[in-house]
Image 1 (spheres, rainbow, N blue to C red):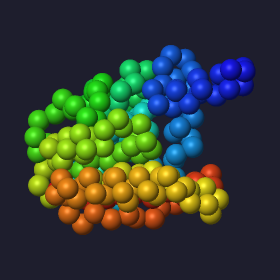
Image 2: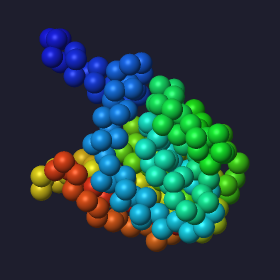
Image 3: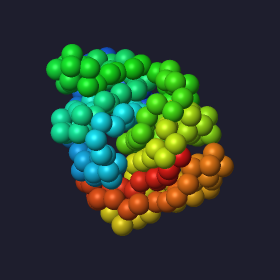
Length: 207
């Protein structure tokens, strides 16, 4: 394996589970890269007043900060598998954490440490690619959502006009069927913004 390939493998692994100083850098880079689709996802949550919201794969905490800064009295919990990014999110949101508007939890989507029917909305941005088991993950999301709660899963499915066949197949042959098998209703794909040439979509559903 040459040096270039080895370095690329390190970077790819960091996107899946950021660690250390390089992981902190990757976390901040992802905030800059994903800002358009992050703001779009938050807008499509259609939050009302005093909602309890969960972000799966909260990264360095940019989206959490946006929601906690709204005038809706929302309580937001961020879940992430990376302890490095949990630390970054804590620094970014220290005031909101002190005020108990944000809570950060280290953990995995397929085994979440939350009680049933806890959240009115669950969202995830560019995290689903790394979930090991879609069924277990969505089973957990369904469990922690309140009846009538909604889920938004944001991801990219193409670049510069070219559709990514593998992602499209994952959405329509795996993700949507899994959600429907768990009795999510109104499951559909919503077209989102183009960000850095990447086409954004979201898969949404209601418990």
